[in-house]
Image (cartoon, rainbow, N blue to C red; front, side):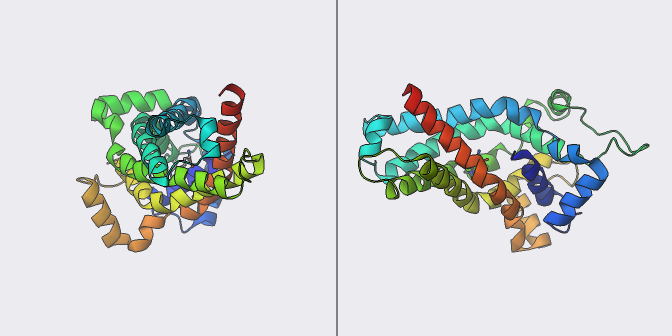
Length: 270
Ligand SMILES: C[N+](C)(C)CCCC[C@H](N)C(=O)O
């Protein structure tokens, strides 16, 4: 559900040919058909379970180590926000590196504007996710598969701390003492945690996407600082918030469902 929105976000962040969300949606639909929005989706689908289990598993276990309480006990007595933040950051740090290669391939495929609909248009550079991975490995070396991972780590470490603080805080505030949060509370708290954390994550998300594109559709940046300074000089402060609106529309339902599944599965098996 979220992927088509994600494709529009990535294009707005890395390509300067679109004037805004509507222009981008219309152009993708016109030149690449509905399928254009689904480019690069197979790797995220294959990896989302592993990446999220690392994030939520490390978060829960770190919190357990810090507070010596189980998930259920923590409902009765909310741990301190500092502990929640540290556990979220730890989960974010580790998930960033497991996500990096999958995210890189997703971004490269999402940015291929070539269309099968138009006869005579050149074939895309990458024929699919595996071909993309092999080509990056061959052309840019094994480290090439982790291009942009520094920015991804900076994006995810503190913001996933805020993510869990917002989620646990909202759940706690809207649940009567001694009870489990209702499904609606979990979904609304999860949705707001998603949007809230993207407020602070978007600047590094833009830098990450630009670094990941490397020399594919623009000049290669010398490093993260060069990418930040060049983007700012050429496009102004607004560049760091590109894609935020469309990403928020994606983040609310995605994170509502993520937290609902997390709570539901823990209650079933916890
Ligand atoms: C912390 N940060 C904002 C980077 C991500 C938080 C939400 C993660 C979720 N998988 C999503 O795609 O929305």
